[in-house]
Length: 106
Image: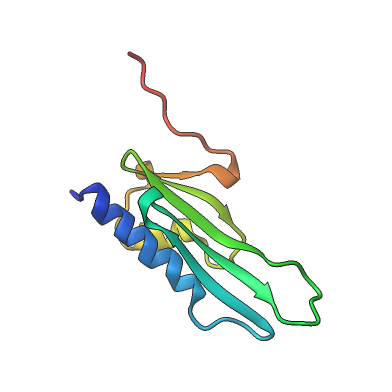
C-alpha cells in the first residue's frame, strides 16, 4: 500500500485515539497527540478515590515510515488494529515486546 508519512501518521493517530472512545467505569480516558513528533497515546486517569495510578494504555509513534508501538496493555492489541486497516506487518515494530527496527548495512 503506497502512502506518505503524513498519511501513515494520520492512520496511527486515528487508531490510537479510538482507544479513548467510551471510557470505562470510574476512569477518565484521554487521547494525547503530539503531531509535531508523530507520537500518539491514550491515558487512563482513575476517578477519586483512586485505587490505581493514572497510566498510559497504548502509545505509538511514526518514524521513517515505520510505526513503533511503545506500549500496549489493551485487550484489543493496536498491532491487530493497524494490520486490519492495511498497514503491513513489516512497517510495525512492537518495542514493548522487545522488537527493534531493522538495521541497514551500508
